[in-house]
Length: 239
Length: 290
Ligand SMILES: Nc1ncnc2c1ncn2[C@@H]1O[C@H](COP(=O)(O)OP(=O)(O)OP(=O)(O)O)[C@@H](O)[C@H]1O
Ligand SMILES: [Mg+2]
Image (cartoon, rainbow over all chains, first blue to last red; front, top):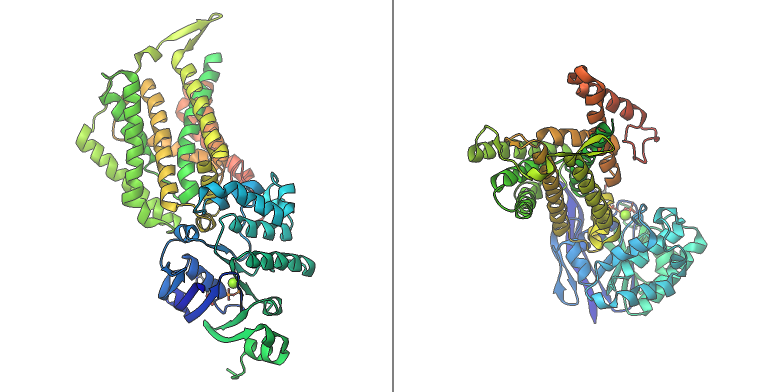
């Protein structure tokens, strides 16, 4: 059953339109990819979904409820969390303070302790650095913190904007292994990546976003087909 | 000599509280709330107008008045300006300040209202042959207690954590569930309560309240938060303390030349800012900008 649906979403900044009708869906436990070149509108799409970028049309449904146009702090309470581009951890606060802030978005306040324990199992390194300043963590550890901080809110849908940014290949593999585990636990995971190959192999479906529209959708099988992937990514219309 | 030091510390403490109130609001909204002066003024009027009540009641009423006024400013004026350019917000806060001064003038008159508040605090006592004013000691104790309480609130509570997070990146804080309206309203209410403490100490020292009563201290507290570092509450409080203490000491040191106390204080301020352009506690002071 569809848990998360974006329907004909339009968004932009000031006089500029960026998204021209984007639609996608994700079910419980599914991992969905979105790829596309710089400036395609990937971050804008996530911003419009979580309420930090103004909507100009279309809607977002979470478990059947229309959440479009709600404020970011209300959307996260409904179970949709974003790990923003560039991680955006609070570098001046400690690791545990960052995680505590993540708890703010929980619907159920009783499960706080359990949520922190689960994060500890998934990202033990964060427990080691519990009281350290988050800004002192390595890039990979900061990415883990950003994901953990979103996870402690127990999201039903987790959006990640370029989780591989600035990480070495081994660390990227590590992070993606955790994301697969998170999806397997029942969360719908939507990943934006510029490095398309990172997600196409894992994702149920990978959408190619170019110039504010979804230009193609690839399945895992398509991903193996290099030519098809390249064509979808760069567009074959010669525009 | 000892009295001069006590006076410096107590004036420093008062300015630290005023600066902290300004710094809290600046942190969450990037708003330099010039109308903080009118929060101090409304609390002062409340103290004077209710002087016949028991002191505790009078103080509670002044805290309520200033916090309510702060909340109203937020709801009626500043809420619409969220995320606007800081210059726009500063101009609006000037407007709110002038407007409220006019309202006070209409309600209370342009001439000072006066009444002796907390008369028990006006005397002096002698320790080892040195005469010490009760007011300076009480002010210091009050300032220390409130600064410690604020330190606890900011460093140890959930509200404090949210305030710190919002001050460094409000958008990300909201993504995590921090309720922006509620948090900003809390910052205003706390800043109003701090303004009431400042008002209390000032009214005890000088119970002549006119519509511009809170202005001087607010301007100096603003200088303080720039000196200390606008982006840190610790810096704001420290800067406020330095400005208050230096001003008080200059008044003693300069003797007959005390009319130049402000000039000398600004010389010191400029020197500090030349050395640390981002303020004393700024992390960015050593970074090249040009
Ligand atoms: N805050 C903003 N104000 C105005 N225009 C913006 C803003 N943010 C993004 N844009 C514009 O919107 C378009 C899409 O940007 P967006 O950040 O969504 O792209 P992206 O696909 O995430 O790119 P990248 O891969 O570089 O992260 C770009 O043309 C960009 O210039
Ligand atoms: Mg982006």
